[in-house]
Length: 305
Image 1 (cartoon, rainbow, N blue to C red):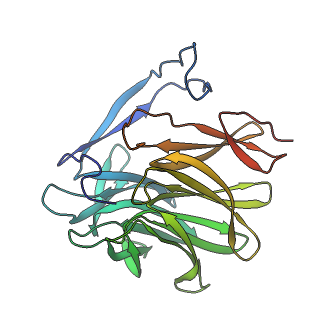
Image 2 (tube, one colour; image 1 turned 135 degrees about the horizontal axis):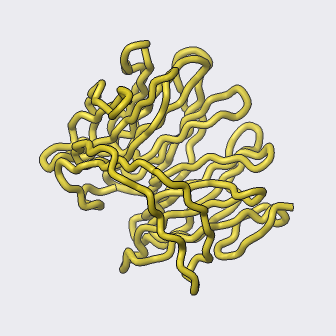
Image 3 (cartoon, rainbow, N blue to C red; image 1 turned 120 degrees about the vertical axis):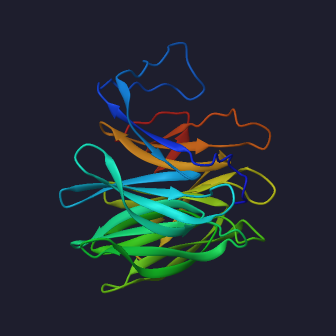
């Protein structure tokens, strides 16, 4: 992913909103409809937090304490800047730790046993995309670096469990010469570190999403750009007991993110389409599980059987 892909303002203010009123969720068909969705009301500004080209938040708890980790990407002159962790002090979030990062795109919090970890996806250091992303372990007072993993234009970490096994998947988007590179899945070795487990060829990967349907485990990858087109397939992989294998392709347009959710007994995936090569004004469509066909379909709703 090239610098300048996103317009980033220096010293951005991250605005935290407090939800004061719960409103119902209404689903509408992709492509619009005649009815208007309800207007979300009841939000008020809770806190302003200064940022430097922020890319993402990660909220997590350790014991009774609540934290936010901010991924700072670029401050206008350098990608090699501090990202920050904020602690809820009872009335506001206060900076509690700074961690040097390199074009940070994403934080992922996860636990193994009673231990808490944070993984940062370092995307770019000003001269190279092939740099170390890092894993930090909570030592009781702060996060301490515990492992480095070489990544290539990393934009996302996804932690998930299959049985007692822990995995981390990284979305590698660019190695400086190609976007068609392997993204990697790592497996916890049971004691102290993650080891390489499986490589999957991706095209400018920007996101992984793990989800389950029944006892089946899936990974969806958002493929953003293959070097010549943004209108490419993103893919879904099924866990076969020892590895992930491709089970479905879905046409997307510069995909940036997948999100899995359920409403009642229905299972959904929604993709964030970013760009189709000529316009940013495009549909980001929900796709719905078709249990009978064991797949997902755009713009058609299927009920789980």
